[in-house]
Length: 273
Image (cartoon, rainbow, N blue to C red; front, side, top):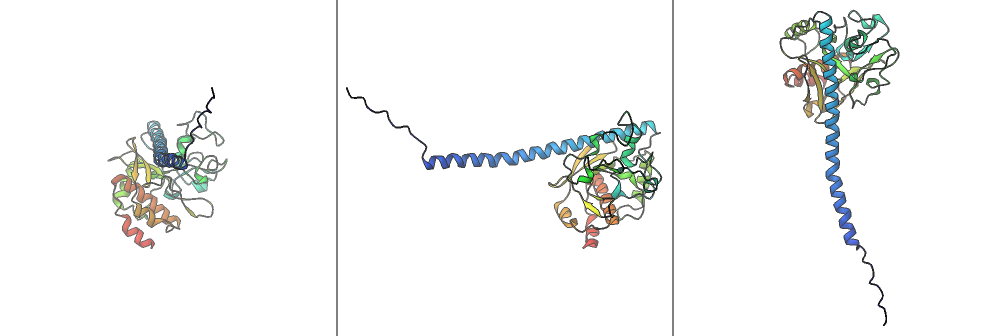
C-alpha cells in the first residue's frame, strides 16, 4: 500500500505575524510608562527618606546643643546652603564648626558618623538619588577640600534683603534658629538653584521633573513631595542669572512649601522678564 506524504507544516502568515508584533508593541507601550512612573515614585521615596534622616540628625543635634538646630552662616547665601565643608574659614564665616557648615555640621559634630574627618566616606543621605548635576552628587560633590550636598538648608542665612523674607518671616526664621518653631516649617529641600562656587554662576539643578516635584523636609520630622506649578517652572528657566536672584528663588520655594501658595512668585517673575 502506497504511503501518503506527511501534511506540510503550517507556518504563520504575514498578517498573523504583524498582528502578534502589534500586540507586543501595544503591551510594551502600556508597560513602559508604568515602569517609568514606578521608577520616579521610588526615587521620590528615596529622596524623602534622605530628608527624614537629615531631620532626625537635626533633632539629635538640638538634643545635644540646647535645642538649637545647626546655626546660620553669618553673611551666608541661601543659594549656597548646600555647602557642607570649605577649608577657608573666611568663606564659611561665623557659624561653622571646624570648617563644616549648614547641614555638614551634622557630619562634623559626629551626629551621623562615628569618626569625623574630611576624608571619611559620605553618608548618602546628603545626596538626592536623581540629581543630575555632578557638583551636587557623589563623588564629584565630595572633594577633599570643598564638599557640597544635594539639599538646601533654610536656616543657612538670615538675611533681610530677600524679596520673600519680610519682617514677619525674618522673625520666624530667627526664632527657628533658636529652636522655637511656631508651626511646622520646611527646613530642607531639593536644590532648585544654587551658587556653584566656580565663577559665581548659579546653576539650574531641579531634581524632580514631573509635575515637577520638590521634596521638602519639615521641622516636625515629616517630609513630603510638593508639586510646583508647571507655568512657574517654565517661567523661571533661563531667567535667574545672578546669585541674589537664586537666593530669592530658593527662599521663595521654602516659603511656598510652608503655605502651598505660589502666587507670590507672580510679581517676582514679572521682574525677571
